[in-house]
Image (cartoon, rainbow, N blue to C red):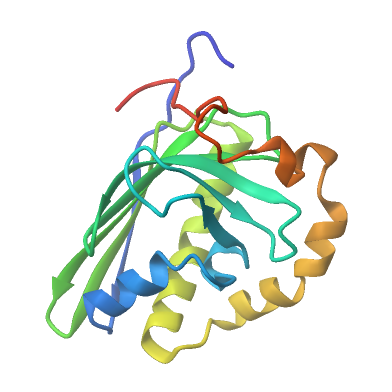
Length: 188
């Protein structure tokens, strides 16, 4: 952990999705299937998504935790926020927020990243992933199918499992309440 980190500016990636807010929300918070917009991972929780709950994004083989965090806010169908730590990186977690607003003919979707350490690998990867996530969430919400990039990531999933680090094994990232929390260094 960093003693006096330099935080990057908050980034907001806004996308219009031509689908009802309830549709976009249900796609975004699904916990029962691989999510192409989240790089083919499955959202795993013990007691559902709610403030204070631990969550992790796991590989479809359920042996690898790719992302871990704690739900900070959950207000259907408008707001979902959580801490975000990639298990393959040593970087401190950041905060990810998804905001949805009804707009004429659809939903305005914001993907917000904040409290990331400037120049960290996590920050670079998060900035690079915003467009991928938004495009694939949009395509699935509008058509029921991911964009080509989401399809390719899903097809490459077995290779991701083979390249995973030992530290990413799911047993190292428990959901139990007595496990150490995934807290932000800087509270928003």
